[in-house]
Image (tube, rainbow, N blue to C red):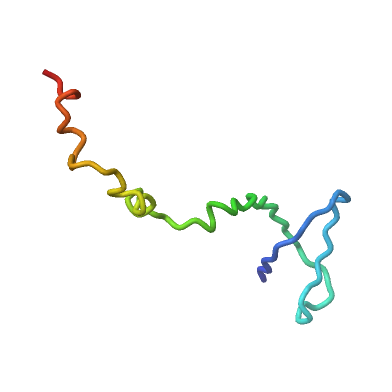
Length: 80
């Protein structure tokens, strides 16, 4: 028994032509075809690297002109 794995495009005629390696002798064989649909590749997701929010927003950190280090110190927003 031998396994040959390849990727093919199936056209609207739904016919599959397969060229076998030279070392496969002529004769009668049992052949099993497994159809495993390929998911369309999401080009944005595949190219994007996993980046933390802090790294993505790095250029904006500290861009506000304020002496307040943490907005939670604003008494207007404290629950009293």
